[in-house]
Image 1: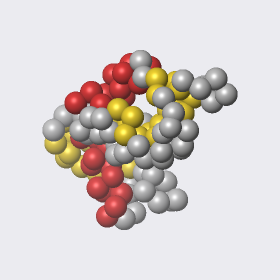
Image 2: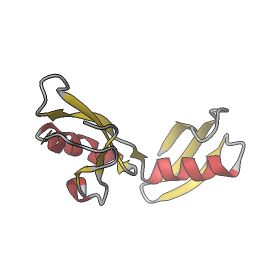
Image 3: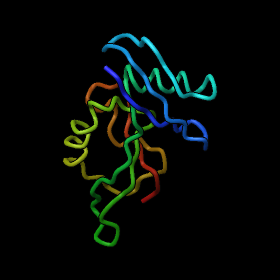
Image 4: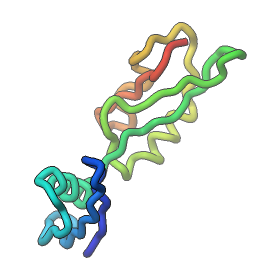
Amino acid sequence: MKKEIICTVCPIGCRITVEGDAGEVRSIEGYTCKRGIQYATDEFLHPVRILTTTVKTNLKDTPLLAVRSRTPVPKEKLMDCMEVIRTVTVEAPVERYQVIVPDICGTGVDIVASGKL
């Protein structure tokens, strides 16, 4: 399999081409630094993303609270995580970085508040 990845580690935005199979990288071309090699390898083998979204609150004047994952979530779990988050309603008070959903979908990643209520 061949995949083109745009590196986001630095502002250069290298277009890196990675070839390999599900568990192995055979070749990487187009990078300009070692960080690009690592990023492309990780993105090819097991892509992850920071999940940012909102949850419902019990307040009429502030119906939504911004939340995010504390660390990146496996890309293939994002939609499962959103299904869980859709069912959550938080009650004030909430402090910044307070855990809203612990260990979401068994990923070991907590969903935390980005702001205060």
